[in-house]
Image (cartoon, rainbow, N blue to C red; front, side):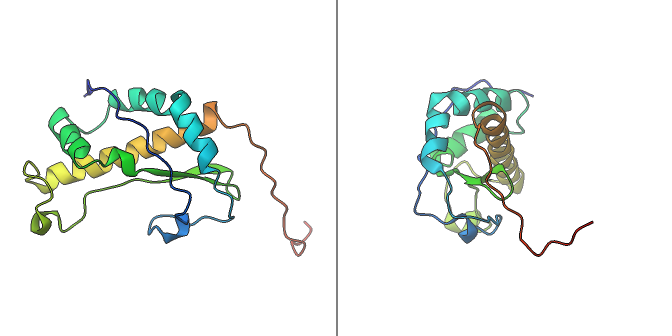
Length: 151
């Protein structure tokens, strides 16, 4: 498909949010390294991932404009999950009660809502992959529990 748009600014990662508060994440550990992840996003990871995402996102330009108008890109959250040795994320989305709340005048179908939500989820995963593959060189300090059986 392809989308020809300029990337929005990377999100500012809010360190006061515990990732376990999200319905779609479960994180072990307490050091989320958001400041460092934010620096990587600003240094180019956001733009690089965004460019990769635009090549085959399910969003069209009208849907992208709605997501931009709703400021959804700024509401991404990224955090380090040391236990899983990965970057975790929470993608923003349009809520199920979008019709009742009348959150945007051009938002008129579940197809549009689905394309936006799916597109944001895909972008979040691409950003995590770019961060992990090309920016992060942290060593995970995992120590197995002492009660693991010997095989």
